[in-house]
Image (tube, rainbow, N blue to C red; front, side, top):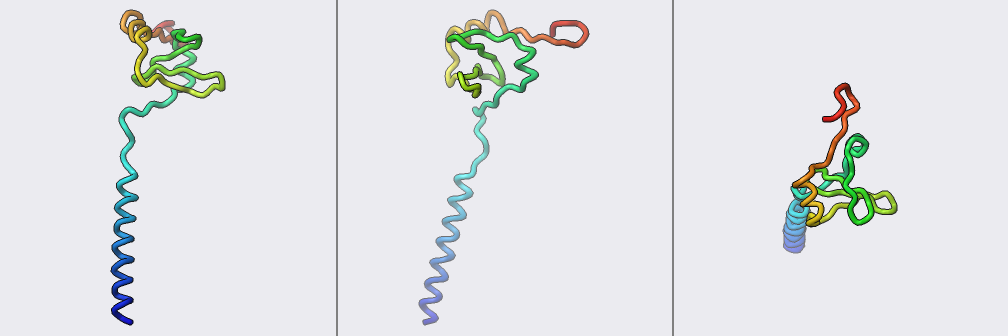
Length: 102
């Protein structure tokens, strides 16, 4: 009987260790390519670039836009037209403090 308990307890330890290792392996550091929607202050002070019928904003290294439901989206690959626009005419930001434009 003691032998069966020893085998079961070893099995339990092994299964627990494998489960803990799997859990730690699946929880990783956040990816560097993640994006976040711009804060309302940014949207309120940045002139949008209109592309595909909606305003787009260059923020955090991505072009971001809202869909018809108001959810923020981004382009996985920068569209050529937006890349060209950004290279030749960067988005204009306004400041409502003294001095006007930033």
